[in-house]
Length: 519
Image (cartoon, rainbow, N blue to C red; front, side, top):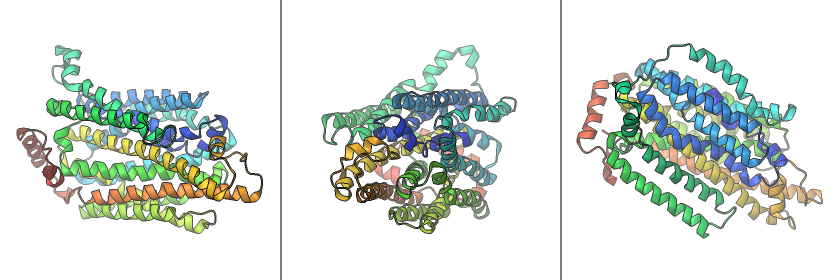
């Protein structure tokens, strides 16, 4: 988990150097993160079914091999497009690692003790997310940005080899699997038709968001066509999944439960704020403050320390009190406050201010990141835990992919708007295409350079307006994750709840039911 989120964020401090090496790649910044998250998200539901029916260890190790292949391709990339392709492959491997790790932990730890273990696991993984910019800064400045990806190969071998020889709980071959044959099982249980609809729906949505305002106007036939195609494909998917019932790759009987979809949305919006901040804070430090890649990584230490401390504390608080909802709400308040304060960044913002804002944001991240998982697993039956967890990580990765893409749109459109205001006579396209660590071609004097820096800072502020809105949405949905005492976990009650779902028709899609129905 540490390596997966390290790979997701290590690129952030390398992005300025990548845009300098690959001409006209500034418009691809959003895809460096979104491509990784897109392939990750599209395969999450399928991987969840694999973890339910097959031994966890072998699925986990297979996904890890795919992840390593993708990171090597990124390290050897000769163009921005090749780098994006490598990120797609790495994301495909990542799809089975996060949910697999959570599934294996859940199989071996009782519910009452799970919050602290989950908090520790998420804390360690989130440490990878926030340590990534520091490690990336060191590698970028001292060697080359390519080692931000190639370093995963030896590290992965060191961490994965011991797992191959350990006995890992979770997952088993279905009864009669070998006797009945592979094809009938795959045909009846895997729902590849649903996957074939889910993947293009998500892809068209993200391409539309990436094109809108960058390559094409928002009202252009291309963007509108992609949006409509995504909506139509998703509509067909819903009909197909309703017919599939319990074997659906997108389990509507599960998604229609308020606790499930609220938990997934809290995770999605929380992760969106995390990834946007992780990508754009180093840009602020390098392009506005004037820091080196190493310095920009070190400037993120307040986030790292606060997040690690709060991550361990969050699990302990839930175990002691038994309730996760109040701590999730409080964490989302801190997220909203931290993002809102960061939207006030300027070239003159003091180190004390931006360090304090990061502490608030990091505390909210660490305290609340594992709580939606706890809420979901406390509600679902153990037999459905793997599928529920994979669906949550589907929301996790789609939230990150969508908001990274939106953040890129907001940033570049902000530059196009603010550069004519603060740097008269400067062509926005020249600045956008030059890479944000180069000497700006149109900056003939110091006043124009300051204007360019101010425009970049204002564009980053626009990104944090959006992340503050996402954090507020997480706060709203946090009220719906359920008021339940994990110390009174009743597996038999959860089994009856899920059986009742199926007996009543499987999917309760009425608006009133989706909002208010808990069990």
